Amino acid sequence: MKNIPIVIDFVVNNDLCIGCGLCVYKCPSKALDMRFNELGFLVPELVDDCDLDGACITVCPFNINPLAEIKSENELANNFLNETENSHPKIGKYKNIYAGYSEEHRLTSSSGGMATFVLTDLLQRGIVNHVFSVKKGTEGGAHYEYAISNNKQELLKGSKTRYFPVTLATVFSQLDKLNGNVAIVGVACFIKAIRLAQFSDPLLKEKIPFLVGIICGGVKSSFFTDYLSNKSGVENKQYTNPNYRIKNFDSSAGDYSFGCTSVITKEKKSIKMRHVGDMWGTGLFKANACDFCDDVTTELADISVGDAWLHPFVENGRGDNVLVTRSNLAEQIIKEGIANNSLKLEKLSLDQFLASQKGSFNHRHKGLPYRVKRANSKGQLTPPKRILIDESSFFFKIVQFFRLKTRQRSIELWKNNPYSLNFDAKIKTLLSVLKFATRLNHKFNSLKTKLKSEN
Ligand SMILES: Cc1cc2nc3c(=O)[nH]c(=O)nc-3n(C[C@H](O)[C@H](O)[C@H](O)COP(=O)(O)OP(=O)(O)OC[C@H]3O[C@@H](n4cnc5c(N)ncnc54)[C@H](O)[C@@H]3O)c2cc1C
Ligand code: SF4
Ligand code: SF4
Image (tube, rainbow, N blue to C red; front, side, top):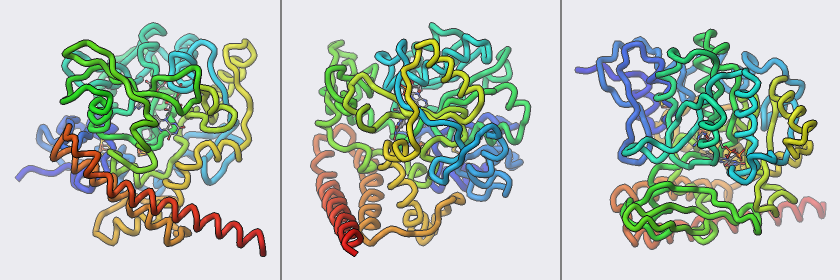
């Protein structure tokens, strides 16, 4: 009988894999490779003999039994972020918080273009010679994948948010062959996996001197893109170039569209995301692992960038970022950018920043103890988490329960019957119950606040 690699046994088989691919890189026997599974997510698969050395699990961000010194983002931050003056339980270590945009990259980026600005700046300063970012996939492959850029022109092809499963495995397999240093952009769990790799191999600290973190509310199955293309009018996977964030410069930041091109008619199709409905608060097509992630702000990156879902920024369809700096170099890039007018940024208070990610904190922090308890009661293993005290109300738990159901059911439904016009009809009841439970929870919260203020 074949040996089962530890990451497959404990992480993939527990539905906790997020597809980062660092286990593939770390495996000395080259026993693993990343493949799409039947649920539309990238996971490692056994492709050769595994000798059970356990190297794979040392870099896994969803390791259920990590060493004490790398148990959570807090311990890892102590190993890597030693230039920060501030710390907060919700956002980890930080230097400063800003909001605004890059003059050069705003209109061609998803938010304010800060991710592209910082990566370009790192190349121009010669701090790094290569960037690992997400770009259009190669012909016949996935829509998007991580790729290597060696100069600004190549890098600019990798702007914009791609809500599509990607993996670092392909680019990390080339890391040793690259001359010079590398900057990497990634969501929190990917950045954590890189930090774990740097912890076990200090040479990687020098090779990868800068990490740009994407503030992340969850990764979607490839079914999400298929679903949106269908809604926009291109049926049966006959689409290319999915674009998740087509801005409306004359409207508000939330008024963006999804678009794609029909491979048959070459026609461009699009649909306003607000007409599709709430794809984020409901958990539709989301990875299970994301329900066990408490790192809202990508706490281990040198700089984290997100959407400025905050007044007055949300009123501007051109897009703005919120950003958190955590290293001297990150701070220098920002300060010099402001000084030479490349960046239009203002300092943001901690409270303003927390408000800009309120929904994510609510779901990922407040709802986490309920989800961990529920998973464990069903015999599912979970990684150690920092927030364990359950302070949520009965109504909040009901919302969590129906979100879990919606997530799971949406993936099952699409897997069993993709492109069916019945998908919306079949998920409708669950979405209505979730909406009702959410309303009840809001009413309960308002009543509680009113009673508190009267006492
Ligand atoms: C899966 C996902 C979930 C997100 N959830 C939230 C959220 O809940 N709240 C929030 O405020 N912001 C969220 N964002 C971030 C937001 O959409 C923008 O990416 C961010 O504000 C940076 O904008 P920008 O204009 O600076 O980026 P740009 O200048 O457009 O550059 C985007 C950078 O991100 C890289 N990238 C694109 N897709 C991915 C990917 N899938 N994984 C890793 N890197 C990628 C690109 O290669 C590029 O370097 C999410 C992004 C992703 C990918
Ligand atoms: S989360 Fe990453 S390291 Fe862990 S099993 Fe999945 S691909 Fe491998
Ligand atoms: S929510 Fe967390 S686990 Fe999920 S993709 Fe984002 S950073 Fe990774």
